[in-house]
Amino acid sequence: MRQSSKSVHEVTVNGRRRESVVPPNMLLIDYLREELRLTGTKTGCDGGECGACTVLVDGKPMLSCITLVSKVNGKEVETVESLSENGRLSSLQRMFHEKLGTQCGFCTPGVIMASEALLRKNANPSDEEIRKALEGNLCRCTGYVKILESVKAVAEAGAAR
Amino acid sequence: MELLPEFEIRQPKTAEEAVALGAEADARYIGGGTDFVPNLRRGLETPSTVVDLSEVSEMQQIEETENGLKIGASVSLQQLISNELVIKQYALLAQAAETIAGTTHRQSATVGGNLCLDTRCQFYNQSEWWRKSNNYCLKYRGDICHVAPQGDICRAAYSGDLAPAMMVYGAKVELVSAAGKRVIDLKDMYQEDGANYLLLNPGELLVAVIIERLDGYNTEYRKVRVRGGVDFPLVGVAVAAKSNAGKLEDIRIALTGTNSRPVFVEGAEESFGKPVDEETIKALVKLVRVQSKPMRSTFTPGSYRSKVVVNVARRLINQLL
Ligand SMILES: Cc1cc2nc3c(=O)[nH]c(=O)nc-3n(C[C@H](O)[C@H](O)[C@H](O)COP(=O)(O)OP(=O)(O)OC[C@H]3O[C@@H](n4cnc5c(N)ncnc54)[C@H](O)[C@@H]3O)c2cc1C
Ligand code: SF4
Ligand code: FES
Ligand code: FES
Image 1 (cartoon, rainbow over the protein chains, first blue to last red):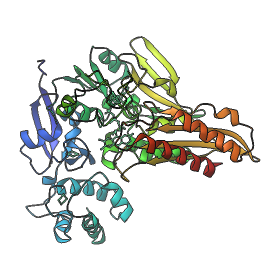
Image 2 (image 1 turned 135 degrees about the vertical axis):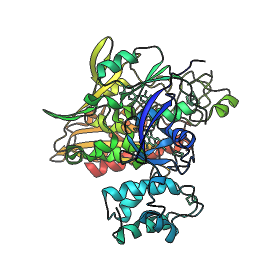
Image 3 (image 1 turned 120 degrees about the vertical axis):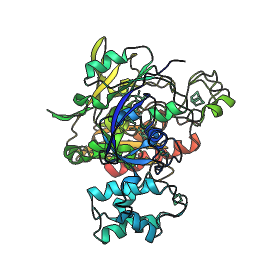
Image 4 (image 1 turned 45 degrees about the horizontal axis):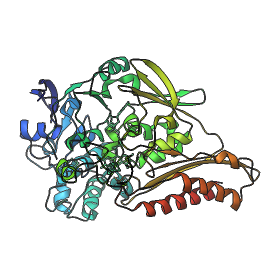
């Protein structure tokens, strides 16, 4: 079998600059979970369909299961682990806890990162805007209403960053 | 899902460099990778080199031309739907782009990737073991088509949403290969063969799409799908129509999801100059009925999609004229 040549990738992950020697066929999700042991980001469908693996790349939401790590070379990646401050949940995370926007929790890291991307651009989104931003995030538990309420609660509290 | 095969990745900075790399045997281009990487993961692609187009800045521009726009193939769908000119003057295009996949996909998905989107079929977009246990099929590695076993051609459905929209704006595409540059009509980039739907030469790169402004037209894109978001079209219909003093001046109808290529409905010009009445509309709807050929390539039956495409087209024509 052909051997892919490994090369150095410089990626900033959650504020920390990393230099990693990885093969070109490595996916971002595997880089995060297997190389960096950042297991907050989840693999759901493993094929671009469910949004569980959503992370931010230069502030934009991206599906890490269908992103080659070379695509984020020189860029800034943020995962759900980046949100808490000094061990305390961010306001967005806290609202998901308080308003029951999370149940089994498997979709939650992806939903939260997609919501985070929305709230940074738009601190006071309408229901329609929230639905649109989260259209690619599937959840088997909450029925989505509680997710919507959690995001709205952050906006209403004026606590969006 | 499968482990990814081994390949090299290249990130050229210019279209010229990209074409030089794309000329290598088994090299493949990727834009956002939102179609290519899932296919790679399903064992449907085995590239030697992946040429990632995301660093080619000359392909990321939307420029105004004398009578329209030139849209670089690496423009993301999000960039397209946020562009003021597109929003104001090419509403149908923005409408179609907004329906593609989900908000997150659209950040990275590109115009070029959408136009070159692989055809889809319930027997093809499956895991390796699933396809293997069905003895594969004509499109990849097998020798019969499970959709039309008597035939010798793949009937997988072309399902990109941008192509019909671009077509009603008279789209042309700029293609570059080691042999040079050519500009052709977008509709001539496709053919009715699900396994060889693109008429691109090996290593040919789609660099830009050139569309013309439509002044005084009523336009609309309508997409029918199972879910309201993150779903390919069962059928998509784009219509731009113009009438004057009760007479049909121009109508352009294009379809997706129905055939192995996006269909620009031919023959409408026979109705130009005729009064906008039932007879004219019937003639136009008939063109759609005859030229659309949905097959059993999706979970919804072809017969259902045939009815849907005709009814959606009829409604749109009535509404826009
Ligand atoms: C869950 C899900 C839902 C989706 N829903 C839709 C939908 O509703 N409608 C829809 O249209 N699509 C849909 N898609 C498919 C895909 O996301 C989009 O079509 C997207 O626009 C593809 O663009 P890309 O840049 O990611 O393509 P890529 O995956 O990068 O490329 C696609 C193909 O085009 C080729 N290519 C790319 N750029 C060029 C170029 N410049 N020159 C020559 N060849 C090129 C590649 O080699 C590849 O074969 C969906 C995908 C997923 C995963
Ligand atoms: S239409 Fe036939 S040949 Fe084409 S992908 Fe489907 S089963 Fe395979
Ligand atoms: S795991 Fe990435 S979209 Fe489902
Ligand atoms: S909380 Fe269980 S999948 Fe969303």
